[in-house]
Length: 233
Image 1 (spheres, rainbow, N blue to C red):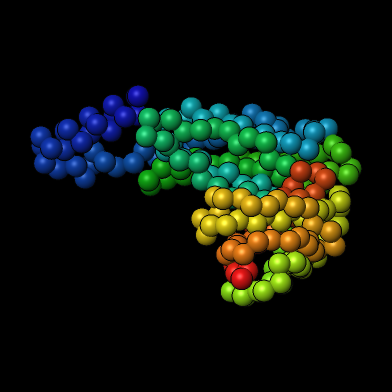
Image 2 (image 1 turned 45 degrees about the horizontal axis):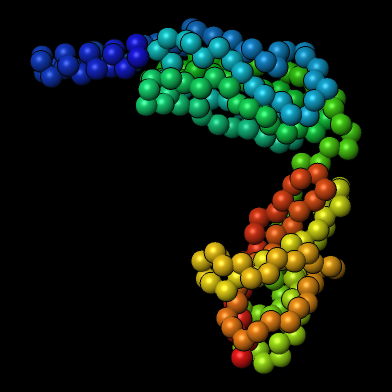
């Protein structure tokens, strides 16, 4: 509320006196420093789910930029997080990112504060994850539908569904097929488990819409495939 009150007061003064150029000048925060709370520099986690937190009570900071790299920013093989956490409509800035799934390895994260005209330097911390060696956070590839083709008209009620998908190394994967009788995918007619990227069943005359999604034993799921339509006479 303090932030909101200050902004409202500035706007009120501007309306009364006309000139706001000096009043709306952003405070210089470039000599301030964000305090990282967890994970701290040099810490070791035996869990693969990592939450990040920092001191979000800095005055005159309207947002925080948060980044995560592996193994570090100087020699980054990948940037896993690059997000700006902004002040909400109540004047609060969230100072936490919850439950990021990380494989075992070395990481570095950093945060800096921002306002409309200035920013703080980054505060950086390195940490190591040494959890489950078999942890799997990679979702299966998205299935690509093959048959029946989109827009097909069929006469044989025995329908053979086929799709393609390259398995991702890791935990066992499976495919679920969903067959609907409406384009909005609200009226589910059949849900089945595919075998070797295929599924067969007998249907009655109607227009159908089908989609496939892949899952693995670790709980990861792919994006939905395209939706294909076919009509059975």
